[in-house]
Length: 430
Ligand code: FES
Ligand SMILES: [Fe+2]
Image (tube, rainbow, N blue to C red; front, side, top):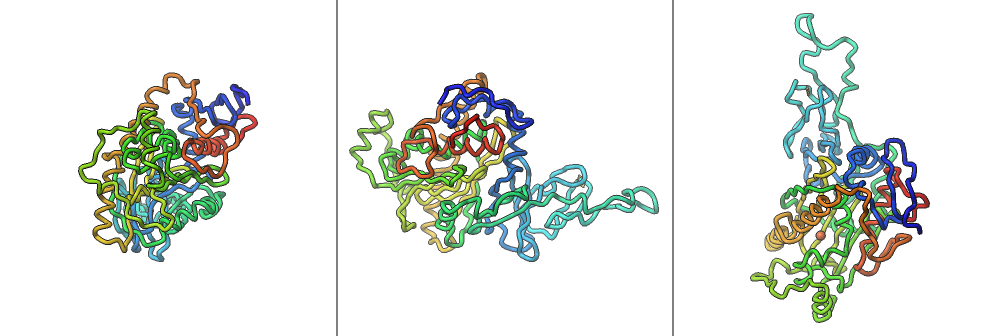
């Protein structure tokens, strides 16, 4: 494998990308900063042949219920129709482009834009235009104005285990096929019972969204950046664990079982690597307690679904994190925290306590945000330089890994990303 595979001609509109290697073990910083790359991502990834997470069915249980959400940077309204079907439409008025729904959620028979009060059905059809025929024979729209051409753009929507995804593309495979057997299995495990939303959190991170997609696939950092997780046994490479990916390597599941390692071995190994902070103590250990609820005994499952979602189980904290971006250097994570309808009050309180441990103001995701901002700040000035993704080796990407000393799923992300973007290196090894 050569260090320089050269400038490969890309699809039209894609800036040239100089991949130092053909197996995605080196990633040029240009890809995180170039505004042309960012614009193309919106077209080829978020409006391309992918399924993006948009919400949970339980958020819109009744006819007329809606939530507002995003796919990439595009605003979306997700509504439950009178016939119980779910509609996803672009939240941008067919008149002059205003946001139609500004609320986070609600219940309505139609969506009315406040600017000139154009009225849209829940499925996006344009129903009414004030003064369409003018007044007393004067003004109004021209006779050839066709309302059917100016509705809210409608997307395909599918649900798997109550989790809703939407796509702009007619060519995208079914959601079940897109997830593949491993992730169907994981969703079936996590959403086996009716869920209940416990609340939302929002986290603004000043960095490129792909640093986050890597972060969620990077099992290597979990016990190094997050000293808290290592010290209190939530996540250590010494535990049983590994990674599972789909055949395209676009999604990743990092999993682990706590209390499967030896505390003494852990202490020695991590001390060598400057992690074990003996002074870290908990006044109330309740926050780290795992109340066993899954038969497989897995206590950590971080599931990254390409391109915009992470579904996590960290001990008893359960959440979907949706990525919403506003530019190449800024994104928001929108956290939907959930539990199950049959949880006891004690379990609900425990999940909420652990939400504070994991969330943006807690001890885990705050650190991810900081790490991403550090990387974003230092890489923009030298876009020909590149990052190294080689923990776990290079070359062909395996579907299953039975240890956690790796960041291989990050290479999987880049392999699929590059296929969609049309910027694969010559002789790409995936
Ligand atoms: S912009 Fe929406 S009605 Fe005019
Ligand atoms: Fe992390």
